[in-house]
Image 1 (spheres, rainbow, N blue to C red):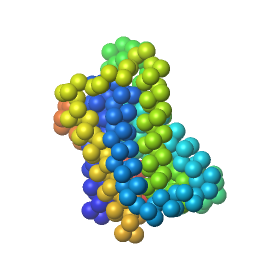
Image 2 (cartoon, rainbow, N blue to C red):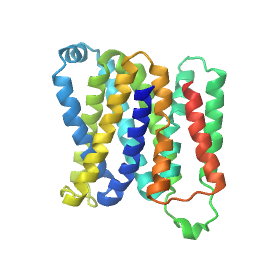
Image 3 (cartoon, one colour):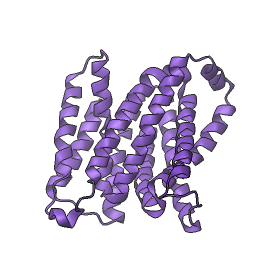
Image 4 (tube, rainbow, N blue to C red):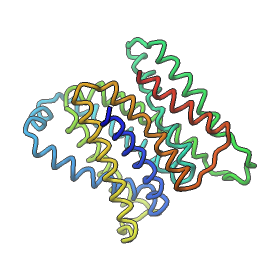
Length: 285
């Protein structure tokens, strides 16, 4: 239980800081720095674990293919989530993105798994809550004009994360193991963003300003702390409990947005946020 709460706490901080980093130095550069930091740490852990290396090298091609496919989805999920957090309210964007569990559950059902009554209820609650978060009293011109809504990026992030975690859990983790699967994700993300930054005309390779590094390092450290807490908690055998508690990360991000950024939501938006968080928790029960 403790490690599940720690995972939620650190993931909530990670998402909140991700929005700040993206606003400061750009979405792709912020995600690149975070993934690079993670690649160094996870790569070091992987090289120091003979058992993990042996399992990965003996894995079939399908396991590696699954890890790469999952990495594609989670990378673009991270980019869209960062974009949503950088342009919208964390109290709205993070809980919606957290509802990726509904997507993973639906894919599991389509692949042959049976869906419980709680699973159906969780999906319906999430679906009902998302539209409420987009309601506001502001006129359209005041909001963002023709700009893409942050809610759209949050929904897209949930879809990408949902597909990515489904593929990861079904094809990669059983054969590659946790450490190797994470390593593939970090390596693919760093390589892809390096290419994008090289070819991009908007964001360049220039190093972030010195004043941005504490924020970037805090985000990267929080992300690794969340992954570590989740892994330790799951290794005790309490996978279900840890997973349920970790879904509260959206609530942590929302609370940070409320207290540190003075974000204000309407009553309907708060109802939607609460519904999405509740639905995500119910899905894990």
